Image (cartoon, rainbow, N blue to C red; front, side, top):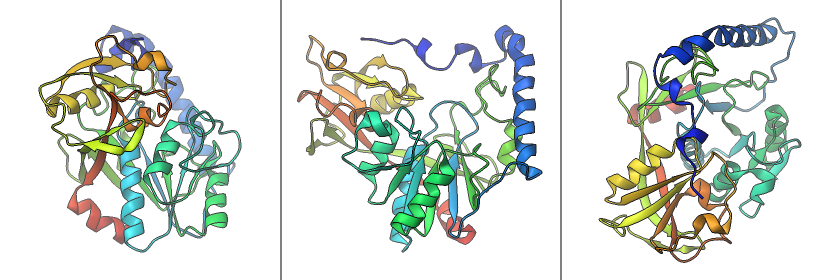
Length: 326
């Protein structure tokens, strides 16, 4: 089954056009609601909960994929190497997040969501999900004795007190037309970036006081057997069917093209739950997916289905500043 770009971000978000100006009054209403929401916390009508350990929130101010999860995984690994006991909390998109739930590498994707399962399989640290991030943080600190908490997303979850805020920006598109929802992709106005501790730019030019992050491909792994892997040049100059159910599929397709693949693109909605027919093609070409999609397909994939392992690489300046701020 093939899904068009229609299932991703609206095309009129790319620039300032007639449609975004038509929706502009609704954006002002959205911003007004956002400011009122923030004011309730500033006046202590709504409570912000702080903890005895540092809390790092990794988020963005725009809708769609910016690369938060690779950064979260990098942070957890880096902090563990520095002697911390990190724990990761997340909303648990597409999972059952109405209650606090501990995620393990063996959890069901329908119960915990694809991103949380991917993080649990990639990191050797506790992962807890809930739409109530305060409750998730309380559990991960109390039950697992974590001495630092990383929140995957949650920049706009003001009930969660935080020590550091890291905003991730897509360096290729940034704010696109720079309008807030629904006229544009921004969850908050661009001025919000001035209040965070770090602005990290994924795959693009950095401005003053911003830090660069690159996505570095590692190897291809077989979806139905993670013990089998091949080098990055395995599909060089070969046609492949690339499947992506993520927020920014074009970045994944471009990464495969950079590795020498002749990519046939298949775009699915973000957090899509695949079935066996989605992975089967008469031509038997290699099928390549993201790690986030692969965690949902272990029991569906044939031997020709692979996922690309990637890692985040952070600016040395960011690395040196991070520990100073905690």
